[in-house]
Image (cartoon, rainbow, N blue to C red; front, top):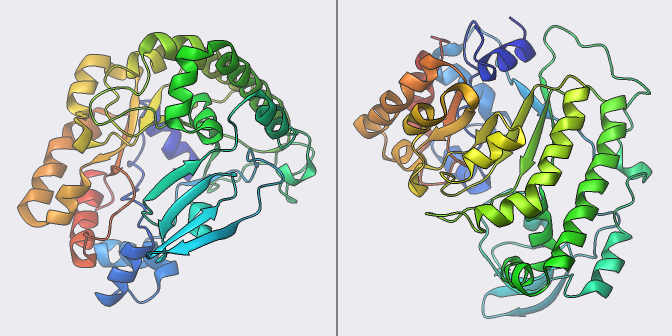
Length: 375
């Protein structure tokens, strides 16, 4: 079975020959630890894990990749250190935020999730409508820099072993939070809802415009939309606000993608998502991740509650992987019924943290390979 077909059949509750093997993605400090414990090449960690888990002799399948279509601002802000004091840098990052980070890191760590970097926020780029008018100029959907040089005028012919391709971008809540900051955005929702609606409408239309060309020039199999809109116990905004400000964009994006015969629509949100899943289903999402166990997310209860209207990715408690031994085994036994029921690709419920040892990750991967049909 091809990589793409296996991924689709798993998430669509069909009949895959095996479940895709996606144990989790380590961060930089995790890889540094693993190199001290036997990993010889950080860039080849997946291949070495594949062999160490007992899968040697089979090709190390990576089932997905992300399209190179760029939804970020162009140009980005100048990255620079504004101040260095008491073991901290105060920096301007690529998004225009003024943030404070440990001087163990630098502003390059803020471009992508290389590691677990805690930061303190000092200022955000959009504080008023004038700032927003300036910000909008950085989001020209037709900018040539949004497109990979490899993009053709029509979608490329798919080969049997081509991976599943995600089109990945920020949702409305995520994007407005990046512009305004979380607390200022929450205040705007109460004090100036018209401004919030204006920003939400702009983001919806910008994404639709970029999607149009992406769907015409790139082979896309699924949308992956990031919102990160929940605390440990509740959603960050009410279901009513979610329905008013976010759902119109979600529905519009999904409706457009369906016209291109895309079948997978994945919502990415950390935190407790109990009250959000029904809204996601209503908007058209059929997959969500990462199902954080520490936030009270229970994949078995979700399957009972939502049936096959929602598939899942990840959902294995990272704390249990770190504990290893019987704790890890019990955790994989806990999620095994959902794997067997279909519509679930198990893996670590966020980035793999540095308290997970290389030997424990190998043992976890070996057991995961058995559950998913690779051994």
